[in-house]
Length: 236
Ligand code: SF4
Image (cartoon, rainbow, N blue to C red; front, side, top):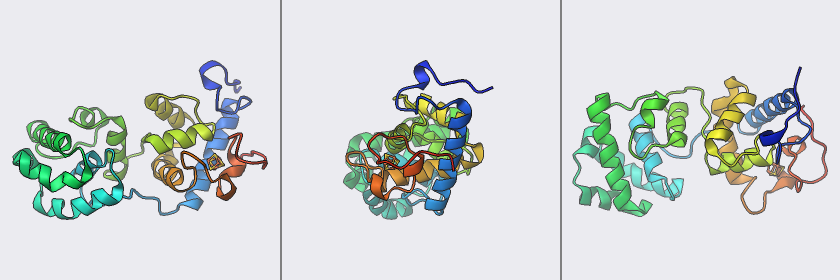
């Protein structure tokens, strides 16, 4: 028997959602996202797990477009973990300068790749616990690497996933780890990978931070956000 959501489960999440109703709505949202963004992918360019790891470190407080502009040459110059680990810091700083915070990012890249060499034979691991031990890699980055470089089912909670899933009433939490846990509970596992990528795109293009474009949103009938308009919320 499904229970009504109480305590930490209420808040922005629709108060009347039982676990069962929430699971149905989460599945409907995941299916709708599949239809809305069939080719959802990361907007960072990469062709190996190491390239993705480097791009994600550079993407902190920088646009994907600018990172792609830098990595186009960077990936030709630094071809493996050793080339970053043994890089001259000043030269690496110059090479990544346009991404901002270049001193800190250069230090992170060097120490991260040193650990890859020391512990993982220069390869990026696909295991969450091992990934989060790498300097500069938090849970979000680790999950994105697992999803995008290795094809593992995982949910990565960035600022867009957090905002949109809260508006969609799939979580009431502010804590990314808790949000990941709640989304994993209700979004069918087979959708995790696409859900992460599509929700990020949706947050960038439609459910933007300041004035979400609810009138143009394909999830509107599934969304309890009070300012979305008047269409009823269903589970498809
Ligand atoms: S209806 Fe509005 S608030 Fe809800 S997901 Fe769409 S854009 Fe975001």
